[in-house]
Image (tube, rainbow, N blue to C red; front, side, top):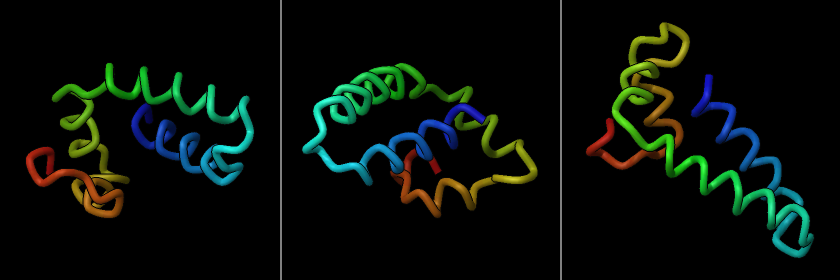
Length: 67
């Protein structure tokens, strides 16, 4: 659930816009942790999750090297 939750949080915070300092700070912190989660194990877990599979990566417009 890690990657989908990061994506949901970032999407909702971006809806607030970058004009809100608090939202901008949270987005920066989430992106910092998101980058740390950029490992093969998360990609593999998405593919193995029967609810998500590769379609999740395509829907989120991931880089082709990850798909």
